[in-house]
Length: 134
Image (cartoon, rainbow, N blue to C red):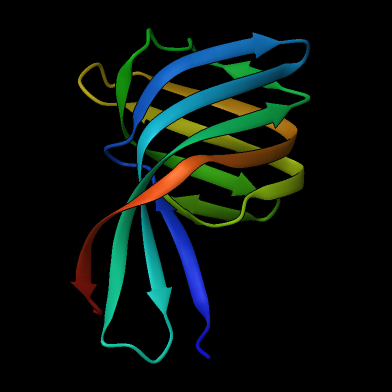
């Protein structure tokens, strides 16, 4: 049996809407690319899935964008680790966490810092294609 690792890719995902609640922000994302790396195989696979990213105990810097919009890229922060444009799954982080997101077209950037971050995968992932290992 081989090990399997899923990694989400931020660029190209669509931010459909942002919900703000009592000290929490939920980012509703569609079309998140997920690369599934399988040990001892010649190729990996590319999938897409809708997700929601919930950040609690938040502090926002910058202006939240008008939705829907496309994500150009960004950082996901898990304490001392910063993941540029990608992050390993699952995301259920606590401590000093957050995200810094760049919006395509407008170039707007916003940051959300928090005390916990969870990514919930919605529905079933959809297979796109096999990709050669680099």
